[in-house]
Amino acid sequence: MGCAAAAAGVIGAGLFVHGLAEGPAGDIAGDGLYAVLIYALIACALPRARSVAITVSAALVCAAVEFAQLTGIPHALGQAFPPVHLVLGSGFDPRDLVVYLCAVAVAAALDAGVRSRWTARPEKAEGALPEESAF
Image (cartoon, rainbow, N blue to C red; front, side):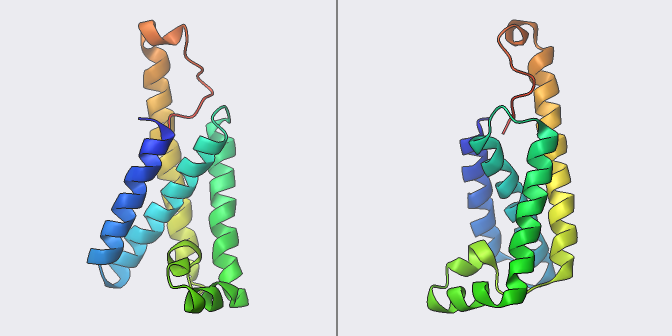
């Protein structure tokens, strides 16, 4: 699956969870999908980047967005245009940082698994770029 298709699937799942799930379970699922989306978007933007670079970048972006919520700016932007809350959130929650790290780690593990399967296939190995992200 290409990174754009993966990102679109994650967005769809995130919107589904946002519309359906409520409470802490919905928040955790949404935060996890958000982190996976960030991983996929970075993988799309930097297709030759190594998984570790994508992983660290995704974790840093997620943490930056979460810490930005301490400023109140994302909340104010969301008051003016509510969909901004889906991208920037509205209030700092330290639990989100843990969820982001776990979700990015899962995305990296899935990416590594897909890469290893891709390069293990003899008909693909010759033209494959093992350092290229599977997302």
